[in-house]
Length: 335
Length: 174
Image (cartoon, rainbow over all chains, first blue to last red; front, side):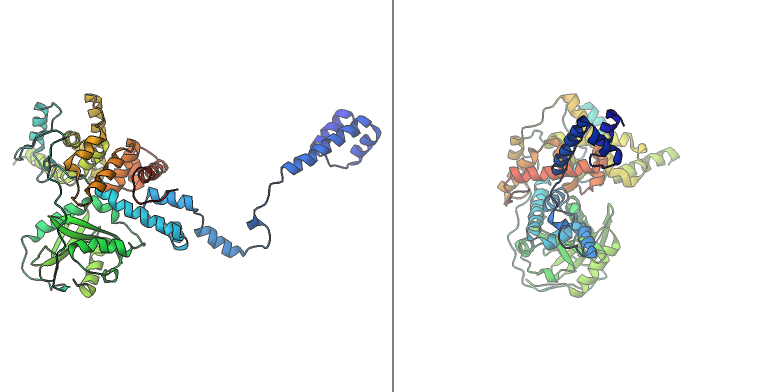
C-alpha cells in the first residue's frame, strides 16, 4: 500500500483497523500523522452532527395504537387551525372539529371569526339597483339603447323609471330601518294546511328567495352551533322568544334580517338530510302552505299562529321535508 | 310561428331564465371588483349584452353562473382598459347612502365597508365570491384562474387584514 492508497482508505473509513492500515501507520510516520489528523476531525464531525432528540422520542415507548389515533386527528397546530378558519370559516373537517373540542382558545377563535363573518356578509351585501332587479329587459332593446348611449352611462331599461346618475346621489333608498320589536301575544303553533290557494303566498316566497340568495354561503353543513347570545340577538328584535332546543336541529347560523321593513330571524338549521335556511316571519300571514323552487333551491312556507309564517328553504326537497316534519311535530314559538 | 321564430323565442327564454336568476349576484360581484355602484351597473349591463351574443357557447345551463361571472370579470377589465378609469376613492364609497344596509349599526357597517374596500383587489375578489356569492374554494379557483392553495391563502390573508384594520373586537389573529 502506497501513501495515496493509504489516504484514500483512511478518508473512506477513518476508524478502520484493517491490518494493512495498521501496518502502514506503524512503519510510516507521515501516514501515522495523517491518520491521527483524520481521526481527530472525525470526532469533531461526530459531535457537530449530534442534534438533541425530542422528549417524545426518548424515555418509555408510547402505545403505538394511541399514537396512531392521535396523529390521525391531531396534526393541526393552533396556527394551522387559525389559518384554515380564516380561509374557510364554515368548513368543518375532522381536524378542525377535534381542535375545537380540545382547545378552548381555538373554539373561541372560531366563534369570533364566525361572528365577524356575519358582519362581513352584511357589509358586503350592497343593494341592487332597480335596473338589475325586477323583470328582465328585452335584451335586444337594451343592446341597441346602450349602443346609442355609449357614453359610459347606464341606460334606463324601457319601462323602468330613469334614475339620476352619479355616485354622490342617493340612487336607491337605504334599507328600511329595523322594525321595533313587536310584542306578540299569541303562542304560535302550526296551523293545519288549508285547501284554499293563497295568491300572495308565491309573492312572499319569491321575496324570501330574493332575500336568502346572497347568504347561501351560510347554508352549508356544520356541526358547531351558534352561541346563546348570537341566537337571542337574531330573535329578539322580532319579538320572538324561542330557545335553541326548540329548533329542529343544530342552529349553525343566526342573524336578524329585515324583509319588507320587518325584523326577521334568519337561521340555518342542520336537519337530518342537510342544512336548511329557516326564516321566521311573524308579520307575514299565509292562508295556506306554499311550495316554491328556484335556482336549484326548494322551499316551503307554512302558516304559523294567528298571523305569522315560517319559510324553510334547502338545496333539495328531502332536506326541507326533514325539517318540516320536525317543525310540524315540535315547533312551538312562545312570545 | 316559423321554426326560426320559435327558436329565437326559446333562446330568449333561456337567456332570461339563466341571466335573470343571477343579475343581483353579478352586480354585487362587479361592485366589489371596481368599488363603484354606477360603474358596476354599467359593467353588468354590458356583460348581459355580451352574454346574450355568446349564449350559444354556453353548453350546460348548470354552468351559467360561473360563465356569467367570468364575463363580468372580463367586462370590468375591458372597461378600465377602455376608459382608463381610476379606482374610486374609498372615502366616496363610505359616504354613499346607497351602501347602508340598515340604519342600526350604520357606523359599524360603514367602517367595515371601508375596510373591505381597502383590501387589495386580489384579496377582495375571492372574499366576495365566497362570502356574498357562496362559491367553494375550487369554484373560486376556476373563476380566478388560480390554484386552490392560492385561493385559500388569499382568503386567509383577506380576513387577517380585516381583523388588523378593523376593530372587530378580535384579539391577534395569529
